[in-house]
Image 1: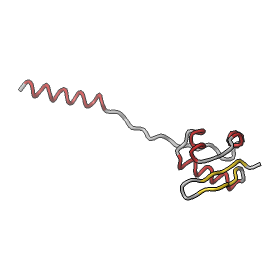
Image 2: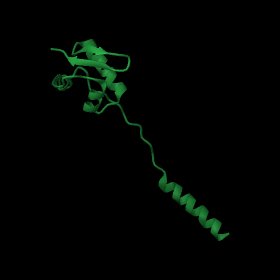
Image 3: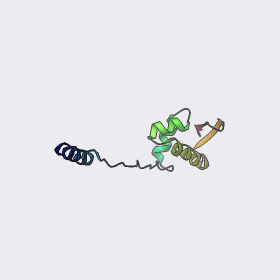
Image 4: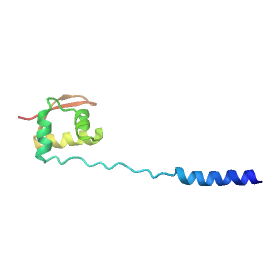
Length: 92
């Protein structure tokens, strides 16, 4: 009986220690109207969602949306692409 009681106590105390809270990473894209963002993008020769995501530490979906927004504003120009990959360049 003592063995089973000790096992239960270990399980109860062990489960409370290993409980960690999971946090969802907040996704805050950079302001598309910011001059700093435009300056950093103009330094890059080719803009793809992957390059923008790595530069600004974003998810690919957020980087894709950012590039589409910048294209509407005229900051970047669409060069070519397919369904999966779109290539942009900074506008002059």
